[in-house]
Image (cartoon, rainbow, N blue to C red; front, side, top):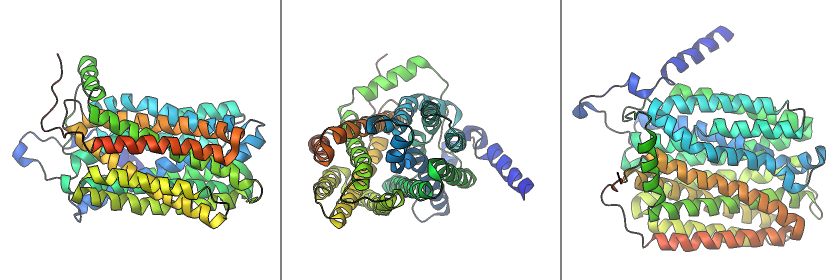
Length: 437
């Protein structure tokens, strides 16, 4: 059994992780295969592979969130310090996204995504054996660097390989995998923490991520529309300058950051709120709140379909308004209303993120820089928002408990809504943006 498994992994590394331009050279444009459309076998394989990849990413990234009160107690650190277990990972991921995009532009999408998933899963298992809080933070930071090879590259892969009429749906399904992964990571960590402590919890999530990584490597179709670019720092800097001066992309980046900051603040604060009086829930019971995450999976796919039909401009502010309604509901004292509020916030967040990220992919590919660079910058802002929002929630909870956390979230969502309304009046990029020499 072990030998068969080893053969399958090695075979996958020799094929799926081989640079796509080596496996699928296309010199005659007329011979280029059509991009995958919804309902076709290639689309289904890509959807399942990227769903599994998104599941692994969010499971690894956010599994410690349900463990924050336990880690705070176990290592005798403050809530804000405990939140660093999440913040260092998202910060390292965000800082590594642009270099990962450069590597993917040179060596291929599938190779970078495959190694990213494998290494991050193995580091997840290593986190379970960390002997101190400081070493746990180091391993989580390394895990963030490893994870960077997946998110920005995945969206660039979809923008290149999926037909435009199905792009919103494909990214919605990928982000739906993020939603399921976020739920399973938090749920598994909460349940296993009650059984055997935080070490067993992190080990369980690492094992799940490893299984997802192997599934994604096996199924992901080749990048037949990828064209490698040699590493040229000058060209990359000029392309980055295009993205950093394009108003539409900058507004989308800010929306992603503000949405994710709100989401991280609410969920971080929620773990502390529900373990205190009058609720007094166990780690597993608090983790059960994350069962609302499948709503995010459905809402992201639904928003992607709707955006494909009516456009992204009207859908994005509606998604943010839905998240705001959810945030308001969490101010109730009734536990069922709190859960309803979290579910509504989750639906709005994933819908908004799905629309914004697919918009970045389309708008980024219209400019002189690459879609991977545009996606990397968006996700840099997105994960920076996660780090900042998580730390802000810890400080807000210590200073004013849930009222302060809600205030932080309300300010962030208001900013996102105003930017989304401004985006409705942002003209599309009708032609490639010129790159200054």
